[in-house]
Length: 204
Length: 250
Image (tube, rainbow over the protein chains, first blue to last red):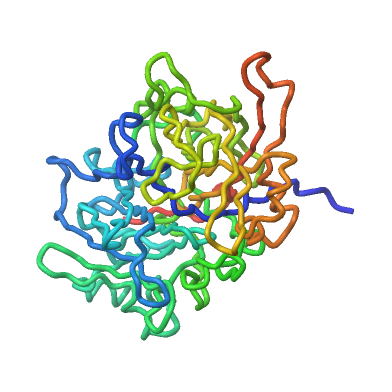
């Protein structure tokens, strides 16, 4: 017998359920007066540096129907590629940028919109720069364990071509599932849970 | 975001790989909604980059005085929510057994009759005008947390012809890295409904289910006021960076 490692097991996940809004965006579902504002609703202010962008996202089920009860959180670097996190050891991120956002999908249209800035490039583990990207976490009724994916920007062709994470995707035909398309100042991004266009999800 | 409250240097190691056999799989036909919402292709495995091992941290400045008191945070002045009064307490740990300090925990639940305050909810049980159903807190230096609420009721839900949810409280937990993000549910010791629930049964391992059942703790119970339930939550652990290559970048 060797010594025991005495590790604990991660608490198993359970679905966020249809009423996730009560806990995470109570003002969105008309529970007012408990929290001043829904956490993560506003990511930028007047002093935030970087290019302002709007991201319009949807989450689609296996029939192509948008989920109207999903919740999306995003996490991204500031315009200089620094994360506003205590674990960021390379320098101080923009104090006027949250880096983290949370939105519920609209209960009628399934659309959700983030007002943020375009992130800078962040180094991969070996020092090569990753293309600008945003980490996405999706929970909803029927999703047993939160799904992780990334959003890349279709107009960053050069950076995308040298991105070490995109390079890991064996079936190149799936790379476009991670690309947000630009129309004016708005990027649109549809996340497909299933089907021909199933989004690449990550085990991170 | 705000400054960390702990003196400990922030950890920057990569996270332990997630044991996906311990979690429910995505496709669980007994829970019907999962059928069309479950990815079918293999996940792309990625050892954490800076984008995964960093994460937001929230300061106590976001917290209101009653955020950890669901009995009063939606109630009219001088009134309180109806139902069995309970304290839920425990520690937020990681897989190494270390407390996770300064982490935001959010919780939500039905009222004592099993009714949620939500426009999409149609159960005939009555709303409690003094109960909203949401709360939040930030863990202390040793990962400890506590809040006060009423014990939620069980309720029927559309899945099979006669499926009921056991009494439960939803938990949303942040660690220090975005890849530690977790949502789960807490159940109550001794509830026979737990083992009949299709959502509980998405978890393959009985020992994993038992990890989500809070224990009645009579020692922590406040006499003539509220019973106590202990519920520890475990997030993914992370490797020590002591011997890892430095991530200098830029």
